[in-house]
Image (cartoon, rainbow, N blue to C red; front, side, top):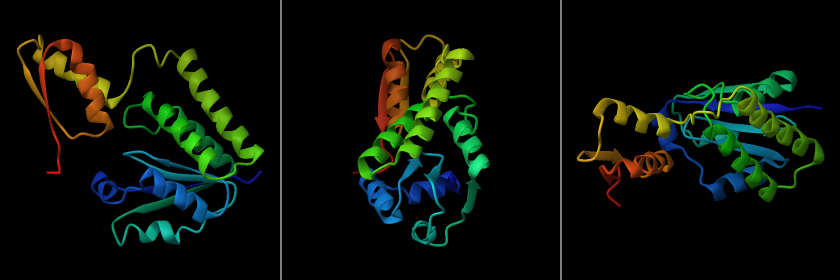
Length: 197
């Protein structure tokens, strides 16, 4: 069966400027006109599909910003999918969050466009592989995520946090997770958003 991955590689500053909302992802999937899965995280934008997609609409959203487009087909696409699901392309090797993000993207894809049996099978097997690798290689024995490691680094550098004041910049998912990891430390945690509103 044909299988393709289309991806955009860009710096974080570019990704901050071009971000699809959940609704926009669903509309994009409909515009693509074939069953597909759109995986968008703070570090990646990829579309998994059976046939090549027309990248023009997606590239236009970047309006001349510096990006690099990559595609993988068939065996390379399957390999890339499994490497992504297992966290081999993540900032933190083997981190847990990508498996959850992929699962959420899969669930959104199932709701936004009629999947066929072949794509369901591919993505279910990829998720199963991700869970098995984390279990068999004990990747989940110690949680691995940017938020967890940031909280651990704060504790390591500052020791007892009972009378400490900590400022977390940003209100996104990672910032929220950092705050959650610091809740039982009795530190005073302040959150400042990057935008006035």
